[in-house]
Amino acid sequence: MWKAIRPIFNLGAVLVTTISFVSCQGNINTSAASLHPDTTEVDSIVGLSDIESKDTVKHQKGYLTKRWRTPVHIQLDTLNPISRDSLARYEKAERRRVRDSVRQELDKLPKHVYFTFDDGPLIGSSAIDSISKARNIKINAFLVGRHANMSKRLKRDLQRYKDNPLVECYNHSYTHGKNRFTMFYSNPVSAYEDFEKNELDLELKHKIARLPGRNIWIYDDVRRIDLKSGASTADMLYTNGYKIYGWDVEWRIYAASGKPIQSVNEIYTRIRNYMANKSSMEPNNVVLLMHDDMFQTKKGQQLLSSLIDTIQTTTDYKFEFIRDYPFRY
Ligand SMILES: [Zn+2]
Image (cartoon, rainbow, N blue to C red):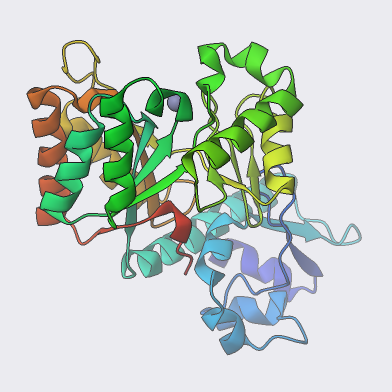
């Protein structure tokens, strides 16, 4: 494709490559960077910013993530147009080429997996706590304060989470919106206050939240909303210092029977695919969502242990705290 088009460039068509960092509702901007630092023939056309040299750009933290997300847009000078078809074909080939080379570079770098457990403390939390210690892995608990006040046992399980240095506790609202999410989010102020109450009640140290029933992400330069209902509450939390995290992969088990909807192998394969295809929210970072009540049965606990064992024996993924999300390269 490149060979076919190159003569057109040589005839003097003026090519301007624009880079727009389109991700998460388009509110991300990036400084100019070459799309082709390793291809001299294209460098001469695209050019680099006057301010940034090729090397400094390449070694900036997050450079590969930016390159991964940045679509290739090529606009021709209207005075010397090539056909739209040729341009589209060239863009497609270029996009694939850039993505393949970035994927290869990212594959050589560390990969991070985040085990997140929602709705605790619940029956199941104490097993999760024990498994994290036994396997020596970091886990993340998005807690619901109302559950902690339902019984002495759950209060004790909450304390176990808090005393375990491998567990970090985050905010999942006090009432969980009473599981009536549209109603809950229809009043963003009271929903926000529900999170505030949870923070105070559970004495949470980190301003990190996940919204009940919503896969919403707002952190750093990212804002991704799955359902509009919930967006105002998330924005209020963010304005007040919170970061909001969703998930890439969800593992569901029928709570009553402890039987999985997806097998360990299916979840493991999904995590691996997200990591390999870079299809998670952040390349090389995969967030797995589970719920504490999945692990109230021996069967459920065995499945969780088995998933951890499989990851630990067959990959070099590091188990991480959401507080450190994302690792960008
Ligand atoms: Zn929840």
